[in-house]
Amino acid sequence: MVLIIRLSSSSYPFLTSSTPNSQSSSHRLHTMAPTHAEMARGFLRPRFIIAFAALALLSYTTYTRLNMYNAHVRLGAIDNCPISNGNSVAGAIVTTKDRLLRSEKVYQQQVALRDPALKENGYGKPWFSIWPTDKDSMNWWGYFPASFNCPHEVERVGRYNDGGKWMCGMSVLENLDPLEKCVIYSMGVNDDSSWEAEMMDRTHCEVWAFDGSVEDVAGDAKGNPRMHFNKVFIGNENRVTAEGSVWKTLPTIMKENGHEWIDVLKVDIEGYEYETLDALMDSYQGSILPFSQLQVEFHLLAGLFLSNDVRGFNKFKRWYERLEGMHLRPFWSEHNLVPISMDYRVGFACIEYSFLNIAGNHRLLRA
Image 1 (spheres, rainbow, N blue to C red):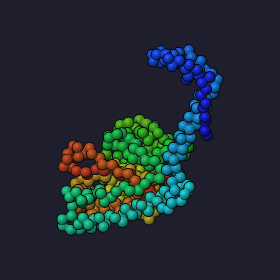
Image 2 (image 1 turned 45 degrees about the vertical axis):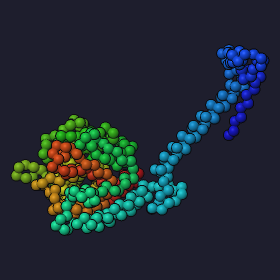
Image 3 (image 1 turned 30 degrees about the vertical axis):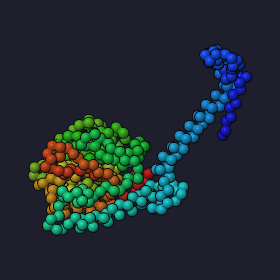
Image 4 (image 1 turned 135 degrees about the vertical axis):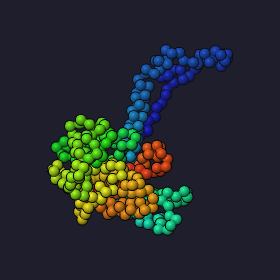
């Protein structure tokens, strides 16, 4: 669209001057300068008003189209990205399945690099260190990068400090119909329940908390009618110890609660996560783990399941690869720096991991 505006001297007399050449310089400047009244009459003439309106319309149309184009580009980067099973296809619409296939391909490429990297750094040799000081070597967590991509948005939920979790697809849970069941299981609610509180604030999910070491939920979620506390430990068998501690398997608990699937499983139990998750994997060996995503904090604490040394690393590697074999894929990790700020000798002994279960037909795989 081309707009031509012709300014006529007859319409706008302040554009010209009939001042004689013989007049002084200062007089010429004075007579050429339009008065406020002349300027007002010029701007209020119909042709000027029409031209101004046309310019305003053109500017608004251009601005709107530019914004629509930018929005299309931003959305296209997510919804219309030309990737399908790793190949470029112009104009292709990428589905959740396409994203998952692509992520799995990339993840397996990363997994294939793990053992060669360990071998290069002396794994199996007496001098191998999982906390090397050599800048070219890798430490413990470097061999287990969270390199899978959640097919939805990822955001941090819970308090800003220790206790927050990186969630995959919060919008999926937020947009559920109130009649659709949404179930969260949380193991470990000793002194912080900010994550549970925010999950209930933003969704209609109900939370079942399990912790045999405390009498009730503490923190922000305490007293919420959708928070259900159970003074129970989850393990590999149903039993009651001589001290009165109650242990139940996850299948038993789910059956008692009438649950067939868990949307989010959170495990933050200060070093006992390995035995607990081992028990879960034992219960569902040969089948699919019954949860969509896992939020877990790993602890390397001497005297518990793992020690912060090469022996502990060997055990962790086998255990972590078992998780991978049960179709869990890490899409985020975050170091918990609270312990190291309290005692530097602890090192990077605590880290949060977020896993997506890529097996089954749950919401995050369908949406």
